[in-house]
Length: 144
Image (cartoon, rainbow, N blue to C red; front, top):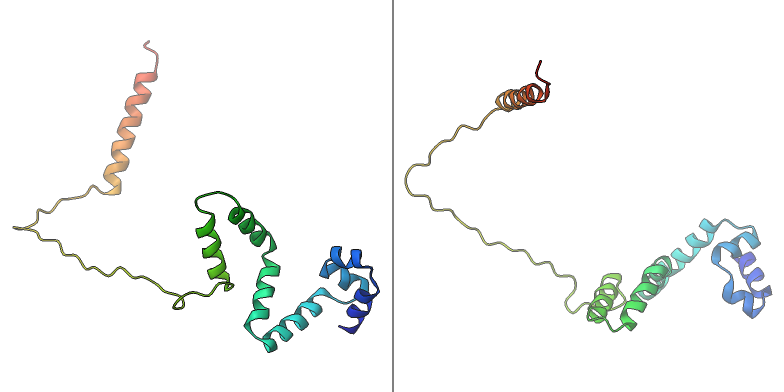
């Protein structure tokens, strides 16, 4: 981590704004996975707010798109922004996550005795299709 910071501090302000973490790791000859592991460990120690920053950094395209929609004049802009921010944890939900279960048992009232119906088997269906095919073949043959 010290090597990464040394390389970062040696950059100009313009370079600091444009360099990606992967490029910085390459400059310092440090595996990117090592940087990510250290950042995640630190964020875990520091709490939830920092872990939300990690979530946002991995979903930069999604965050950018939500921002574009939120700034638009679409009638769904506010709702989409709210749903995304609640789902990612940036916006607190009023009472935590809620799940609605529709549990309305319904009964079917049948009067009298139900009539049993025999369903055709697959053999019957195959024979019927074969008969149709034979009829089509006979109809398509030219008359001698």
